[in-house]
Length: 436
Image (cartoon, rainbow, N blue to C red; front, side):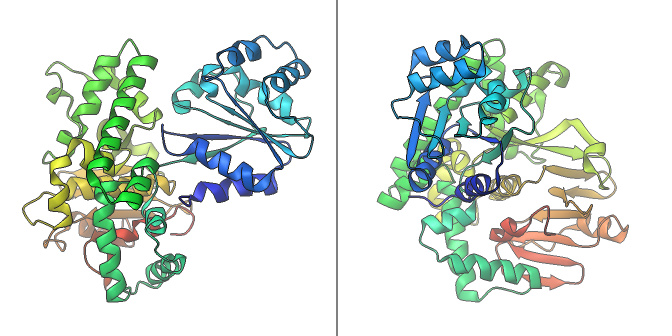
């Protein structure tokens, strides 16, 4: 079984909850249902699962409930497992089919006799349409594709290695060379395989990249099916945007340019389409900021942005599938910039950061600018070639006192040069909003 950090998050919910249910959100096929089932097997004597898509009568039955007692009675009838107080986890999957279930969870958990977990597809989209989300009665765990640390676990890297890397990051010291070389080799692998559980599990089992590609291509098709199913009015526009992500990332400025899709396009017309892709978990937007000062949200320019794939493996394996061998061989003629940036965006998002970049005609462009809960601004450049010391924009920001330390993510080991730290790109996961 793939070891997922979300398992520990669910465990924390169980250990600390009072009268709260749990909502597990995330993009399609990131492992939500699998991890809930695995957790239930380990921590509950009884597990009742109700899938509102597989059981077509279930959604209608739940919608007809008039009171909390009536709803619970209906759930007990739908369950194939005897519901025993204090012993049972009740898991309602695909709740987007019947959004009233999310609203009603407040009344169910108030009884405090059973544990309730909800999940489903496209919840980032669907929850916006729910009249009353029960704040205080519903904790949330958001799942993403496997991050690089989770991928290393799947490739049998000892957990102590993560501690070594984090310690080196904290002390601003290089990791041992043999370890650095091994982690970089795994990172190149990760650029191809990515973090979708089915792709990772297949590669771990068979090492067959062709099979992995088929899985990634099927995931792309599923995303497009979701677009057609859940957003009929703008489906063609959203699909066009989705298909353009690789080309736009590979362009010189990597910014998504609407005119490349339609020369008459205006952001106001297509704004909801970009938002839909982000809410569905299919894409990760990084917005331009006019001023790199805390809080970054206040200087966000909503119509200037980059758009990354939610999983780097789906970028290289499905859209850019011909570059896989070149990545493994580290062919110097391949443009790795956009691929590296996508992996970094994915890792930062997984760690809880909102994604921003900075571009100024006088000061230059910084690939990522993130902020900590303490209000610290961290400029980050991503370099994939030998010119990793060319980063005038970061030096300009530091020189004007807009940040106290800058970071460059690249292929080499950690180097400290004044107020600029060069980090191996796999150390992206060491950044956390609370820690830095």
